[in-house]
Figure 1 (tube, helix red, strand yellow):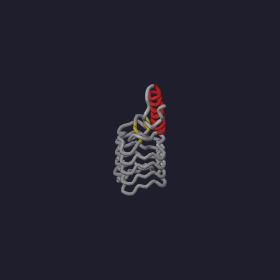
Figure 2 (cartoon, one colour):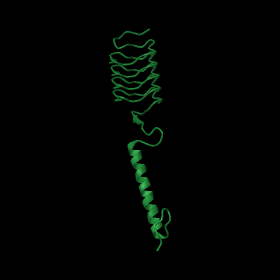
Figure 3 (spheres, helix red, strand yellow):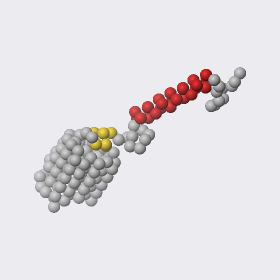
Figure 4 (cartoon, helix red, strand yellow):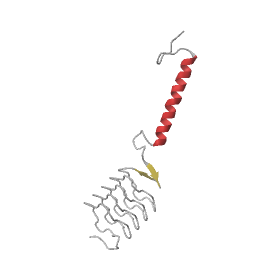
Length: 150
């Protein structure tokens, strides 16, 4: 009688063992993919055609009313994106380039806008209490109160 040694099988039992191992590996891969772990960028989700992850490029996208609360979008590009009423509470937008973005009525409370470029952005009616704006560029941005930053 042949003893059941690791990776040593003969005949039909070897095929069955290989199939069981393959099925277990496939199931583990499916679970990993469903959990969003593993491959680079696997934690990203797509919202209105924009991949939500750091350093993404969503320039010109129509993202009206999207919920990006707490999203990590550090270093991302949103040139002329249409994002009125977007929920960006607590989002990390540090170093983001949002030149000309329409953020009218957006909720940016507690967002990290450190070093972000919001030149020519429309922030009219935006909620910005607690937003961190150190080093942010707001040249000619339309501010929440309707004034233009110079």
